[in-house]
Length: 543
Image 1 (cartoon, rainbow, N blue to C red):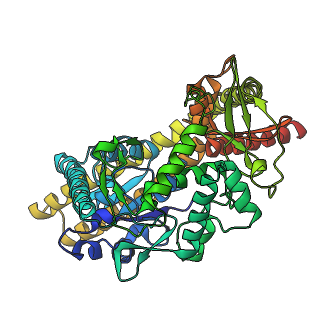
Image 2: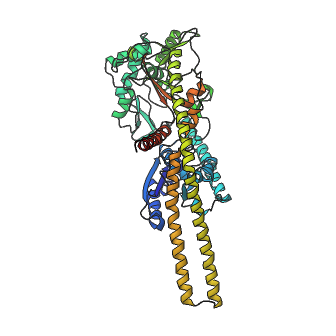
Image 3: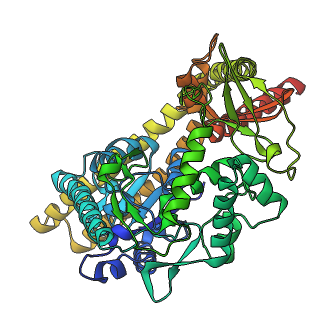
């Protein structure tokens, strides 16, 4: 197997100094790439290796919820990457506990070498030791820097908001940023006309769903389509709904900013770097009237709120955390199914047919208990498959373990020979200094020792690659097998089980329900191993 070196690059707003852009420039993607390319080109042992690159542009380092780093972690765990090189440890992450876990636990377990240039850190030169207290302090400092910077940025945003400056990265629907001042908003007239139309229809007594249907019938451009038209660079999901629907109309009708008020601080992150947010009480919001141009009047807004409140039934709201919260999607339009609460059960339906026939969504109401029965049957099937694969992998591991141990022993033997030869070289030097051997004999024996060291050193990576290949065939530490096999005999779905194992449930009709499970990549890995094992058995039987 060819030795693969991965460059990892990352930059985010955290890297901009508060007093200028010097650090931003030094940490730029171009600068990081040039630095890593120069280093890799100067290391003889990387000559001829395959070099790949992953990057996260504009992603925070306070967590590992980054596409580039997740892809690289998956490759490292599956043996597809042998060495990772970064500019400094803060590129990999700013959470010192998680970074330390990778350096001291995960990377050594996966057999991955990790190099941080600016920190002078190379795991291959530690000989099994940790990075030392200086590395731990560096990781801690990176995290403290990120937390301090986050607090300073938030304070700066609060100050700007209080003075009526718009601080969000993107303008909300109905507005665009003023080309002359990105801290100001100006009305996007085509979108503003649709917002006014929504409020006018709501004042006429139309519900959010009815308004959505009217706009779709009139082929009014959606919020996504308008944002794309004005040059938004946001990457929309392939299945993103390009039509008006009730919930987005409700959000717009409830947004008081359309009256010209700048409102800041309605939600805040639970902790630095996390994507979990919490609502903030209204009395803690920053509200600046007249800070942005108004699309509707305050009177219009208040009247719409009173109509919406009067129309909303009292006491009919069900619990937010249902069994399939955020999991049920229509297989046709991709929208989430609406829960309809009944006395003893919950029904789900797709509301899209009420607003558009564009996707051909059928009208139905499906009981939660029926969906749960279908999902449970699928889960039990996956659990049985995982258990079968577990037994197969156990058998395969027993077959391969002696060979792996033999190769590991050979690596240990070669390492001992290298150390022994190095010790012998020191003895040669002492003999030469004492006059026991001539200069010619010293030169000859020293060169022979160097040749033996080079020969043994060259063999070790080849053997280690073979060890990794054999270990990959055992499917060790496969999350799909480990997690799903424990669900053998499961008789009831719980919210915790759904969260852990179910990525999405797509409902096409009451007769067709598709369950998308988590750990899909892990499943693909063991499926390939199982197929290869079955093929080998078949060949042995035919011989």
